[in-house]
Figure (tube, rainbow, N blue to C red):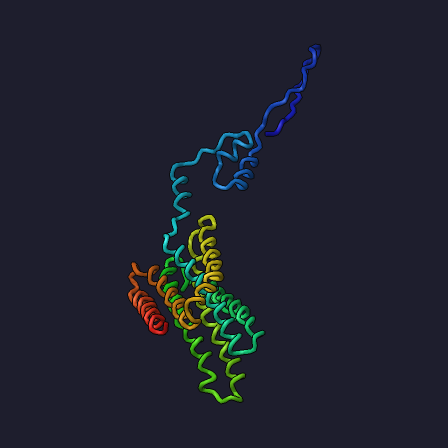
Amino acid sequence: MVLRLTVEPTPAGSRSRPLQSEPEYEPSLCGRNNELLGSYPAIACSASGQSPPNRAPHQEGSVLQSVSKIPGRYYLAIFVLAFATLSYQILITRFFSVMLHYHFAFAAISLAMLGLTRGAMQVYGKPARYAAERVGIEFARHASWFALSSVGAMIVFLCVPLVVSAENVPLALALATIAFVAPFTEGGVCITLLLTRLPYRGGWLYAADLLGAAVGCLGVIFILLVIDPVSATLWIGASAAGVGWIVVRTSDDVRSVRLSGAVALTLAVAATVHF
C-alpha cells in the first residue's frame, strides 16, 4: 500500500485544511508478490493489502492441467537406473584394481562421467526422437542397451588376457576400458529422459534419483559379500532391463516390450546359473 498526499486548494477567506492521506493501491505490487509466491495469488495479494484478482474458471482449469501427474512407474524406473549405474561404477573399480594397477581403479569415475555426459548431450541433440510422448519407449530401449553393454564390456575386459599375447595385454586392456563408456552413455540417456521430458513435480523425481544412487553405493558393498562381481553385473543388467519392461509393458511398441523382457529374462537366468 502506498500513501499519496493530496493538497486541495483553499478558497480565499477560509481556514486551511490539513493534509489528507488517501490509500492508493500499487498495481504492480500484487504482481510482484505473485512472482514470489507462485500460484497462490490470494496469499500474495493479501500480503499487499489488496484483494486477489478474479480468475476465470477456465483459467483455473488450465493451470491445474498444465502440471500433469507422473505415473508411479517412472519413480521406480529412475530409482533402479540410478541404483544400477552407481553399483556398476563401483563394480568396475573392482575389476580395474585386479586386472590393472590399483591406482587405475579411479579411472572408473572418469569413464562414468564421460558416459553420462555423452548420454545427456544425445538427448538434447535429438529433441524429435526423445520427445515427451516417447519417454517410455526410449527409456525401455536404452535400459536394455545399458544391460547388454554393461555385461558385454565386462566380458571383453575379463577375456582380454586370455586371447591376447602377454606383451600386448597392457595395450589391449587400455583399449578395452573404453568399452565401459557405452553402458554409462545408455544410463545417461535414461536418467536425462526422465528428468527433462516429464512434468516437474516438486523435485520428487530427482529425490528418487538421488535415493537410488545412494542405495546403490551402499548396497553393492553388501551384494559383493553374497555373490561375486560377475554375478552382480548380470543381476544389475537384469534389473535395468526389467524396469524398462515395467515402464513400457502397456505400450503399443511390441518391439521394445519384447526386447526389454527378453534381455531381463536372459540375464536373470545367466546370473542364476553362474551363481
